Length: 266
Length: 266
Image (cartoon, rainbow over the protein chains, first blue to last red):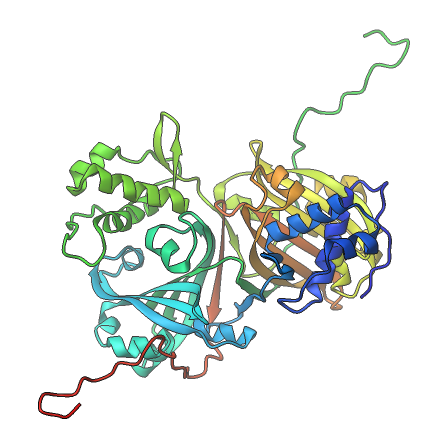
């Protein structure tokens, strides 16, 4: 889609914001790692100043849609890994959306009493596993997996090294039934920052999942710490129970006061 | 739950990491804005050095679980607004999870041709609305709402000022059916950073939603830019179609080589 409509100087949006909107549409159509047009090309194409082009490109870099590579130019940021949230699936399977097979490296394998993620579920002990996912050596995510005692006790390190936790649980004869998922953003603390190659406090997308079997038993709790510019989560929800909405926003700030008209007494 | 088990010096986790784990469990049980015990209290309670206490608290501040208030101490961070993703609902309704009524302020109300969020859906023009949500004057989220031409043309500024978009669409006689949602984390650019009171590039949780009516027509596209430490998204997914998982991680690094035994020839 070539966008030939001109940027409008009279618009309520500034020129660089209007240009950013056009460029976002352009980026959406380009494959990852595409080289963006040069500043000069963009100046010519959109009839704006070089300052306007720089501000628009800078905003898109800040948003994570573009990346600058020293001496090489500006490129469309790498494609995000798509995690569909329509049903339970092994985490590793989502990397197929970018045509990659990640490597898994076990950073932790130990028994723990009262780890908080299990204690919060009313369980007292279990196996704790930390796995680092990398693609071509680049960190993507860290998983902290806790398997409650009765199941964790039957799992070996080599099973965990070789296979996703869902496969290991299925190999134990468990039938996975459903999962509860929460998503937040949280700063990377200590070790985690180091493993993911980011600064301490760098915000991560954090997906926590509790998996239940057909007897409603918790069979695992996993927390996935995801690099935020690398993942996209998708789902479809329906309006089955959407009642008629009724809500009125309160108006912030002072009420509009009508000035007394001419001739009236103040 | 009083946690009396001692921190173990022999553990593979460092002392400050073990303490952070205990404190996370403690925080999970405390209401928002609770004052945390002082450094000295924690030193006495867990039998660790002040340095260990400081490192553990620092990590939890980095994660966003605790906030430091100048001269007043360290507190449990404000409760997150819970956004259940089980079905379509008006965005404003999620604030009831923290017992608050947000204010809505319209920052934009204009007609646009080929805005990218509509163009991506094959639609050529529509009404663009930007709403800032605040609670007690503090910014929470910015929504960018696009309503396609045929519906947007019938919506007034005062309808948008007073009511959530779902209510306005229902008032037009539309029946909302389902929505497609994507979630990413993205840096805050320009205006958006300003409205939310964060630095440019500050990562936001970004929820995009396309809503369809019973005739499968797109009736709105909304992008919610959420302050990442304020929101938690929740859903339950089932394993209905979870096939038996089969995946083997490739092993990074060199293969384990068995040393030749004594008496064998190298």
